[in-house]
Image (spheres, rainbow, N blue to C red):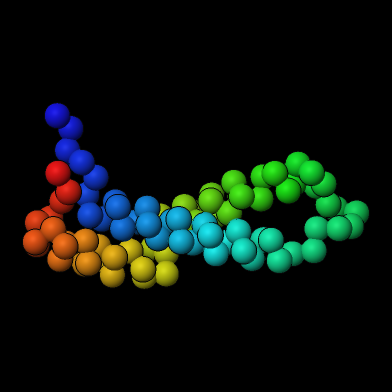
Length: 84
């Protein structure tokens, strides 16, 4: 049986989702009317773009949220280094 996700990978994934949501909010606040608007296609893919931005930011170190989340995960596991 393959081991489950580690606390570090879970924490990074959490940070990626958080940053993706923040990116989606920022992208959504942009004015999309004008000559360079992507129209309906742009609206459809804004969520995907936000997710990708969040994932990329988390992989490059993020904003420091992952280490704090990982610390809490380990505490909840009873100081075990990974989830089974």
